[in-house]
Every structure is written in C-alpha cells, then in structure tokens.
Amino acid sequence: MPELRKDPIVDRWVIIAKNRAERPLELTEGEPARRTSTADCPFCEGHERETTEEVLAVRTAGTAANGPGWQVRVVTNLYPALLPGAGAFSPNAANLFDAQPALGAHEVVIEHPRHLLGTSDLSVDELTGVLLVYRERLAALRALNRYLQPIVFKNVGAAAGASIEHAHSQIMALPLVPREIAAELAAASRYHQHNRQCLYCQLVADELSSGQRLVHPPSNRPEIGFVAISAYAARTPFETWILPAEHQSDLEQLSAAGARELAAVVRTVVAKIDSALDRPAYNYIIHTSPFDTFENDHYHWHIEIIPRVTKTAGFEWGTGLAINPVPPEEAAAIMRALHLAG
Image 1 (cartoon, rainbow, N blue to C red):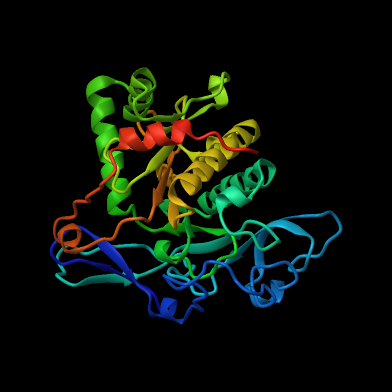
Image 2 (cartoon, helix red, strand yellow):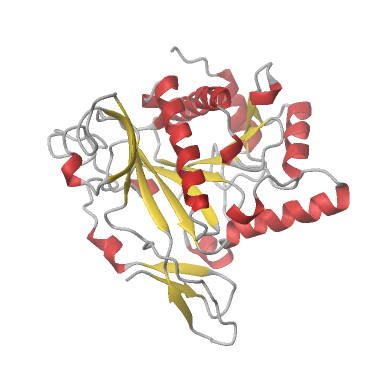
C-alpha cells in the first residue's frame, strides 16, 4: 500500500509507492521517442479494456462507456501513488519517523483517441476539451470533501518521467498541501497582508510593463486573457509560466471561453519551446488553490512549463538550488522571435 512519510529532519513529505515500479516503461532516455507500432498502446482508441474503467469521458452521443467513440477519457491510474479512501490525515510531530496511509485520488487524463505525443500535437479545440475536463474533475474531487490539495501535471518524454508516450496528463488530490505549494501560498498570503494586493497580479503587471520576459501578451479581452512569461528565477532553460491576466485563485473558475483562450496560449508556448529546443522532454504543472481556500484574494492559479534540458547533479541535490545556464530574458526573446505556422 502506498504510504506518506515525513522526513525526520525537514518539513517534507514523500510518497513511498512500491507498486509504481511495476509500471510498463515504453520510454527510455536516449531511445527514439516514437513507437514503431501503436497496436499495443493501452491509451489508443479500441484498447479501453486495458485501462481501469473510465471516471469521465467526453464521447460521441450513443457510444458506450469504456468503448470507442471518445475524445477525452479519464481513468484511475492503474499504478496509483495514492489510494482512494476517506481516512483522516493526522501527522504526529512527536514521532521522529512519521508515516500515514497515502490516501487520495490519482487519475489519468487520456487526451486524444489517436496516438499523439505532446501538447503541441493537439489542436486548440482538442486542448480546450482537455482543460474543461480538468475543471470538471477538480470540481468532482472537491465535492467528495476528502482531500485538500489538487494538482494537475503532464510528463512528456522519458527525461520528464513519462512511462507511456501517448498524450496524457494526470490529476492527483492529496490529503496535505505539499511543501512547494505551501510555500507559494504562504508568500502570497504575506504579500497580500502587507500590500492588500495579490502577489501574482503584481507580477503580471510588472512583467507586462517591463516586457523583458514577456513571451505571450494577453488578448484584448482581459476577462479571459492569459499572459505567458519566462520565469524570473527559472530553474531550467525556457521555464515558462502562464497566468490569468485578471485575478483567479482556482482553475475551477475557468470559463469555457477562457479555456479556449488558454488552450491557444499553451499550445503556442509549447510549440515555441519545441521549436527552440528541438522537442525536449518537459513537464507542465498546474498549481491551483487548496480545496479549502476556493475563491480567495491572495493566491493566483498558474501553469509552470519546465523543459528537461539540464541534469540535477550533486550541487542541486545538496543545496536545493538550481543552476540555469540560459537567462530568462534571452529565452523570452528567442520565443518572441519565433513565428510558427499553424
């Protein structure tokens, strides 16, 4: 059974999930990214029996559940890091070696019935459908009233942790707020208390004013606009953040029109990263408010796109400090200069 364990030295929890080692690995670093055949891909249309039963599917009217005819399909992860359950998460600070059952939700979003690879391979319409599925699943997980922190993420390529190449992303709901998100929330809360303003809204305003790290400006419709910036303290070359131009604390506030606008921005940004870095492995991660702080004034949901083009070595592991050889201002200039067809 997966287990949440607390590091005895620092306030950091990790998931110990032995069953994850049983996942079939299609992708290996250094090998070609493309399958020679898709006949045995469990995520392709027609192979629905090779996954768990679907939790949600966007499908053609009249088609049966767990069969062909879908556009986006959500299933529970066959090798979950978290197991469903309603038990309380109750860390014990008095225990040096603290462990808790790893209860939560772990779902896979299969983004297309055909064997596509990355985000830029989807059309704007197709990616819009994926984003709306994220919104629907987060609302459903919130309604269970069991979990605290959702996270949506996508791994593309072996170096980014993908084990299957077919375009897919994952949704997890945790019984705790992980350290990275907790640090963001704490900083945003402190800034709001001192300045009566959202830290991320100020970031967007400053980046739009400066323009140095601007990758993609928002549309002329600010109520659904999104801005893409090269992260000021980028951990890797071409790390890019996408944020709502106007304040939104939670992905569930995304409108249908906003989803389409966001899909166009995400697709453009990933396509530019693909072009600049020759289709690197990458992760994208969506940080959104915890389920117990819906619609707040201080936190601002956002997407972090992290190309995996540098290695984590001894210095990084020993200090927690990343070394990025490409200044964000240069990365932004390169991406702004790219004009892609389609």
